[in-house]
Amino acid sequence: MLRSVSLITRSEEETMEVGAALGRFLRPGDMVFLIGELGSGKTRLAKGLIAQATGAPREDVVSPTFTLMNRFEGDFDVYHADLYRLAPEHVESIGLEDALDQGGALLVEWAERISWTEDDALVVRFQAPDRTDTRIIVLEWQDRSPWRERMPLILKEIPEGMKLDHESLSV
Image 1 (cartoon, rainbow, N blue to C red):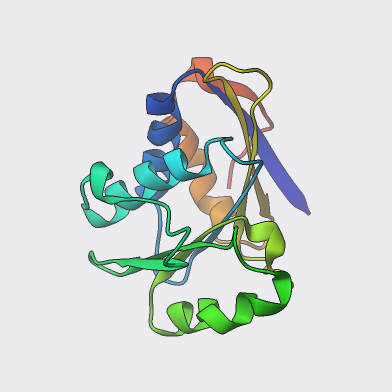
Image 2 (spheres, helix red, strand yellow; image 1 turned 30 degrees about the horizontal axis):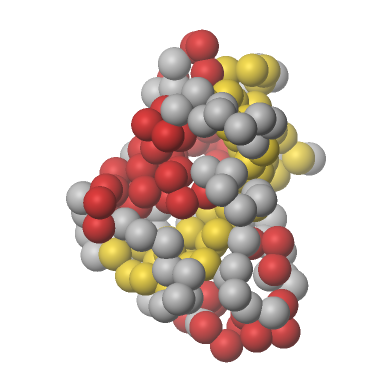
């Protein structure tokens, strides 16, 4: 069964803080798929997540639009892929599955271009409803996903004023 929680952020900093909350609970083998329009907040969330998970300075976390995938070292590696420039038939050529095979975690911007899906992935959908910094961020996971057990802990890290809705998430 698909579960979800909707959040609202009102600044780039708040979007990065949502990423940091996710990064505190990121584990080797995890997949986080970011989906949203250009400028909707994917890279901002990635900055917070990667910086928290690896200790990399936020300013060093940039979208790999031209390099396609960056590796960040920490207690385990976090691979950050950006599929914006790739046609779906070329996605497999950049080695997303290889990153997981090496014991890392995988964060993918423009993940809607992936032809395969994973029930274990956390899907993060972004909406930018107006021309301000306000973002609607929807976190989605399956019941059998490892994110199910982590989500109540993640939500404790997020201020109440940023939570639009969430069902009881007891594990």
